[in-house]
Length: 142
Image (cartoon, rainbow, N blue to C red; front, side, top):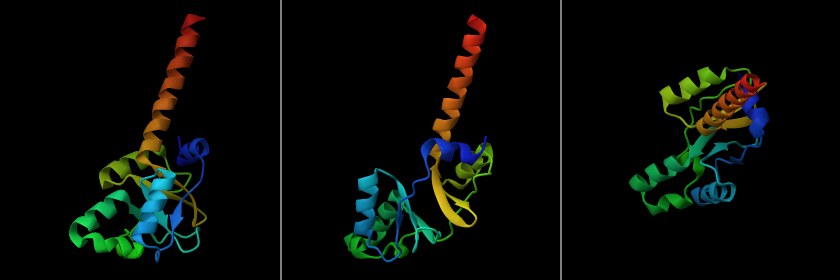
């Protein structure tokens, strides 16, 4: 199984935010799309960073409410771990767990193609196991 299998099932929509957008604008995007992280990109194709709800909370704690008017670039993670559609699902799950990251942008030809979360990967694996179980049960009952 590959990351492409997960993307095929969940879709390739990616919400992005510009680095100069305010944290308030970021929070509106997170709420509107009911997501936990956004890729930071000037053009919707490149990956300049990633910012999550956790980043906001950590910085609010240390920087105070004034952070809400600060640019996203101030709180984003600039060193982004990415993957490709060809990457193994099992390897990606291990890397995400080891690095304690929950969202990974998917790049195809060095362009943003999708984003996967650890939840997407777990759901895909569970769905696959349930489908296999159902096939085995049907085979046995025949």
